[in-house]
Structures are given as structure tokens and as C-alpha cells.
Length: 203
Image (tube, rainbow, N blue to C red):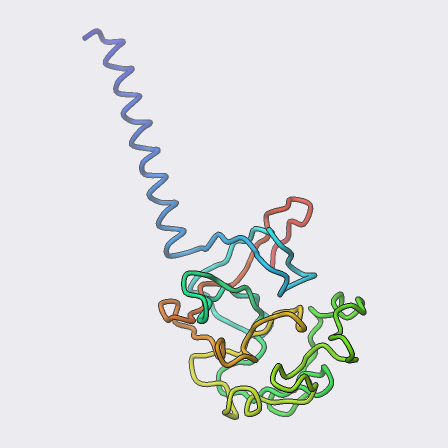
């Protein structure tokens, strides 16, 4: 084999090995560091819409207002995108669209655009944050899930599009776990929307 041929094969092998390493790193990142997900359904409109693509960071500190990717407890193999409303140990109550955490008013600025659209109100109602069992705007955790506080290592999550979102208000979803391996585990916090490019945003 000529020196030129040896150099060609050496370069080719190096490129193949480098590509394999890069693919391996990408797979490890996707498994342990980030999640690359596509949005389906209207539950987070208008902040996130159908077919948006997002990057979520795994193993990060969770706080109220974070948008999270969650294993759908009522649909194995599927995922929900929701927003953290209630933290572990807290009481959660709504009174005519006003959120109360531990009996103190808490603002939800991420709903501002949503509130501007009158079609977001439930038909026949002046409100959009309702108890799904009664369609009434006054409820707490006891009313919807049978306990007064959010359990340890769990969160109360809701979609921004309150009248259509299937979220922690429903018993089949309930509180979601901070253990990503759990059947209802949080998989990561959304940090970036990269598609469509016209809606590119870092969170």
C-alpha cells in the first residue's frame, strides 16, 4: 500500500471514530442532560402551540412557573407539557381565576396573553380556571384531589390554556413526581424553543 493510500485510510478511520464519538456524546446528552421534544395539543396555548420544538434541561432545580415535560400518567409512552403552579408542601386554591398559595395571592403573568382572548373562557362562564368536576371557579386541592397540600417531591401542574388542559386538577393526572423514572415523572424544564425559528426563545 502506498504512503498516500495509508494516509487516506488513516484519515478516513479518524473521521469515522470522531463521528462515532460525537454521536455517542449526543446520545448521552439526550439521555441524561437534555430532552428534545415536540409540542402536541393546545393545552399551553398561546405560549406554546402545536408542533413547536423545545429543549428541556434534565436534573435542574424546579420552581413555580417553570414549564416542564412530564410523563403522561394516563397515557403511557406519551408526554405532557405543563407549568408548575404548586410546590411540595403548599396549599393551592383558586378563586375566580386568582391563584392563592398558602392563602396568599400569587400572580400568573404568563396568562396575560391568554386573558386577552375572550374565546378562552369556558362557554357560559366568565372564568377559565375551573374545577373540572363542577365547572366552578372556586376550588382547592381538597376539592379536586382529596388532600390539602402538595405531597413531598411532587408538584401541582397546569396548562396555560386552562379550559382545555388535562392537568393536575384531574385525578387521573394528579400530582407529578420530581423523580424522572416515576410513571408520572418530570423529565426536564423547558429552556429553549428553537422551532419555528420565528418564535425562537430562551426561557
